[in-house]
Image 1 (cartoon, rainbow, N blue to C red):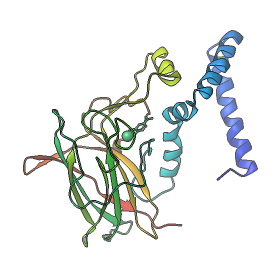
Image 2 (tube, helix red, strand yellow; image 1 turned 60 degrees about the vertical axis):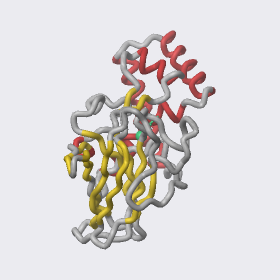
Image 3 (cartoon, rainbow, N blue to C red; image 1 turned 90 degrees about the horizontal axis):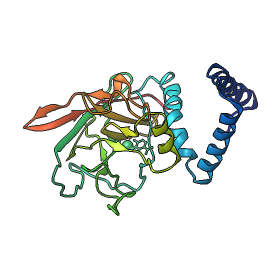
Image 4 (cartoon, helix red, strand yellow; image 1 turned 90 degrees about the vertical axis):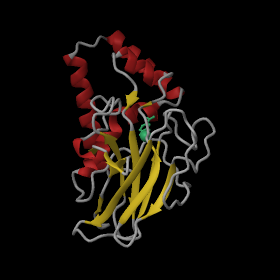
Length: 251
Ligand code: DHB
Ligand code: FE
């Protein structure tokens, strides 16, 4: 949905002011400015504008929403959500990988008053043990490493899968070239994605990261917040990630 003219004018002029200030503060030359214009044109021709913008800015739009919601903190959705993920009960389909580590993901869904929410859809997706996403990479069928659970009469959900690993965003193009030229890397820390919904409630789209995980402190998409990081526990000898959700009522 587009912005009203007043908000649009305010937002665009603040963006322009920020860029103008950076150009002046860092003594960017006209030649360098021209190089940047040309770079952005080539990046757009290569259809990489969404990637570049998402790397730097998606998190800000999410955090703007976090400021006004009473529910669980939201996080970037990323490009690998699939609406057509299968319904699952207790296990995500996984492929056999040498380095796979079993992981249980569990938790409970409540409303903002603390009442348990049965019948909430908990849609989970995450990378393979080699950092790929089903339905997008390596012809892995869409019903692997993702699925839609339903919270039980206690609002609880629980699913067995394998642990995701750090993921490198597409870095062979203009976005990767920029990050490299800046001396930055293109890694995201290992994470599990969630989309939790129930009619009458605001959907929570979020990700959870692993305490101490590689790149947690330097996510290339700046998507990590303290309240999205969890320490796993051992339950019956299996790494267990506990993620509870609070759903705010829909407006
Ligand atoms: C990207 C990939 C992800 O898995 C994610 O969660 C966010 C962003 C990306 O490739 O830009
Ligand atoms: Fe992801």
